[in-house]
Image (cartoon, rainbow, N blue to C red; front, side):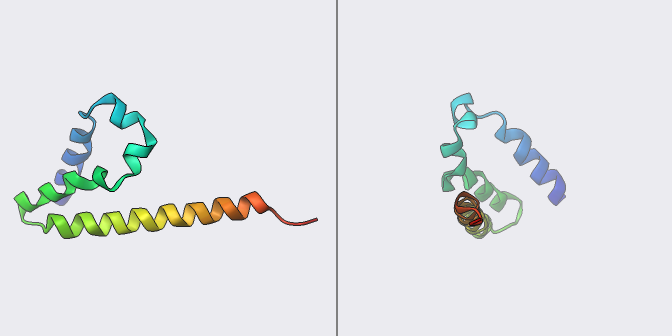
Length: 77
């Protein structure tokens, strides 16, 4: 049931405007997880799920920025 719900959400997210799908800034904003709140309709706590995914996404972005900084400085030779 959960897999079917997730696959439906993924497929329906492809129906959004083309500009929103191609703009990386729009994709990385917390608003992009708003559809997760719809899981309330099938018995999940949508708001809590959305906040959890937002926290994970923000942590991942922070980690990636730190890696980019480290890669940019490079080893001194």
